[in-house]
Length: 154
Image (cartoon, rainbow, N blue to C red):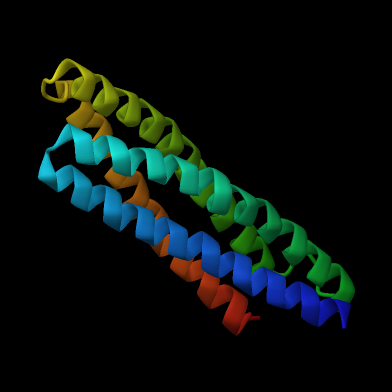
């Protein structure tokens, strides 16, 4: 019963992690296409909040439930699919952490532009390109992690 409960929590948190990531990328990308600091600032505020409320807890739950299920099932940590999943999870985290830092900076830039009634600074476009690049790098890794979790290739 414990294993099935853990598996349910693991699948749900993976879904939240992936869904929040893809949804955030979509909405922030769309807001930035508008070029309007008011819309960008509001979307960035929601994006940062979603990362704290949904993404961060799910990112913590994933390895905890995954490792606990491995322990209960007797699957060794040295299994290739487990090792690959963990390495990809670390890789995704290495993309996500700087993306969050960029989101915070871009939110401040958009809020400052809104308060000043001006345009976004040139650095904003650079940060946005890096943020998109990090998302593009992380997305395929997340898909591979899902595949590894479902197929568990030997």
